[in-house]
Image (cartoon, rainbow, N blue to C red; front, side):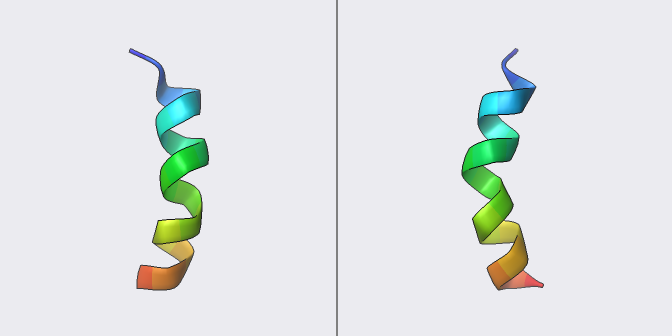
Length: 18
């Protein structure tokens, strides 16, 4: 599993959701 890729992609989304 590529956690780093998932995090890098979802990190901006997480900031927006928060």
